[in-house]
Amino acid sequence: MYDTLCVLGTAPRAAERKMLASEIWQFLKVVLGFFIVALLWLFVVYLPGRTMERWEDQCSGRGEGEIWSPAGSDSPSKP
Image 1 (cartoon, one colour):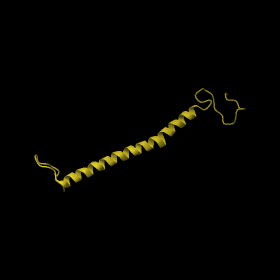
Image 2 (tube, helix red, strand yellow; image 1 turned 90 degrees about the vertical axis):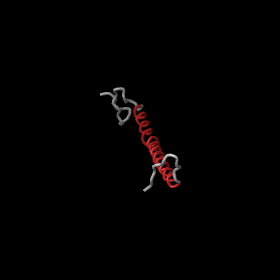
Image 3 (cartoon, rainbow, N blue to C red; image 1 turned 180 degrees about the vertical axis):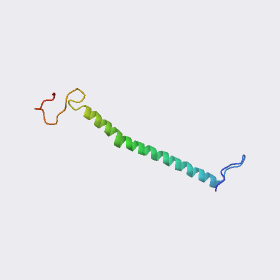
Image 4 (cartoon, rainbow, N blue to C red; image 1 turned 30 degrees about the horizontal axis):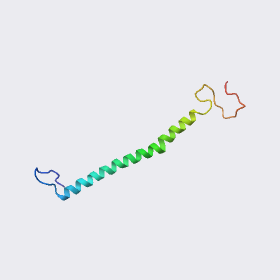
């Protein structure tokens, strides 16, 4: 379709330069799209999930060997 081989000593034609520029812009758009999707995933999925894990770990009775009971404070927490 396009002859992109340049002979030494000759300048590339305008059509070849436009083709190369459009391919570079296409590549940059794909890279930019990847980074936008990665940032969205980071802020929408990953960081809120980590925050929820930390919040759940700070609930009373977690990680201390106690059994957490949603029934209330009057129920025994240890068997």
